[in-house]
Length: 397
Length: 143
Image 1 (cartoon, rainbow over the protein chains, first blue to last red):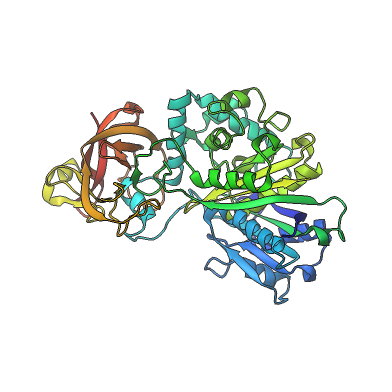
Image 2 (image 1 turned 90 degrees about the vertical axis):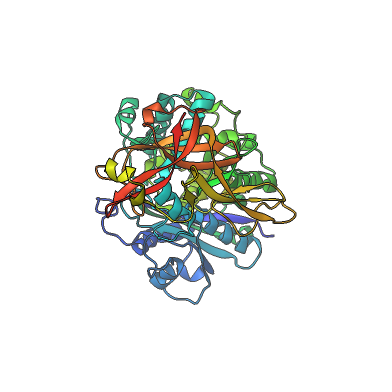
């Protein structure tokens, strides 16, 4: 195995179609900006890229059938290099990073470009558009009328029941996230919000409000990764990839994602996310207590409270107290989503896993400005996506 | 609209083959005779990786259970969801049936009446109307 490092990262600021940030830019244009920035940051030229690992765009671009990496190669100049298009719902960016990492770690290539970007359709994310009675997503939509946010709301409601979480505490996660994103030049929302403003936003799926779930966004992120050996030619302070892991859902998962499942013997939700994070801890020899900060998939505020507990970063039921004591802020003992998270960026699904790698890199280099985690040494990134996919990565300086 | 809903001849399942109401509300599922895992809808083989031998037999689920959690659809969801106009927010339950199945379904009662842990019963009720018909699905009613 070769040691893998992140040599350069880039991003296109997130926005929504028609606004002053992304306007009418195509996914290829967004990706071009992110890739260009990552290559400049790394100090490499396009000809030095030996392979592309891309999160395959589900909603936009490509040639209309879920392709992204090939468009980037075409855009930058066809050099005949291999392209890997990875599809894993919202975990696709994390999957693309994992394949890029694996290719370099396994010695197949020395320098790989990882990229993800998306132009999202307006409105609620549609998990399925097919009218097929064999598709569980279709059955859930037609027979139950259960849109995506309803899952998060169901879990949040249960947490309220189990731990007495208040709606104010849920809203404070957004207040904290938006405070962080004030100083993130790549965030879609760069204005703080007050507790009252969050609580005044309408319910999307009670108990979750509009400001407590992430909207859809357009955006792109890229990372140039290479072997440690090769990195010596470019930098004296590379960021090391301690590990990258991928997992899928367990049979005993307690959350019915289609219509039904067996009544579980205990609470075990999002087994795919926990499994990916546990694998990452195990493979890297880095434990929850060694983590300086975490970037996790906060499609909703609920996850910021639940995930750290499920992964052993804190005790079950402790997250609300840590939040209210400021411990999950960048300057706290357990910083969560110093970037501002999905809640502040909105989700460009395939970009998110790579967006996290960029944030981890900036944090570990000490380049995160007003949202900087003091003396950040080790960062954890995590995504999960449709179909029971999840990824985790640990980066260190 | 209520007239349609109450005329049995004009009731039609929103998706055929998944449930019936002739002899009480029943979900048409299956169970593995080897590991006892319940399934809804039916499956061809047992999906439990710990199961030694897949022995799937058809079975139905109905009766009562506990409301494990719930949420509310406060906004009209995108297609292929279907709902009656004007849109009225509805509660969605996650119910642990006494027969061992955890299943999602719309709640008959208003969101304000929901309580985690409440006892509920499986029913078949209209979920949307169109073409002079009431399209039905399974739902849960608070006891």
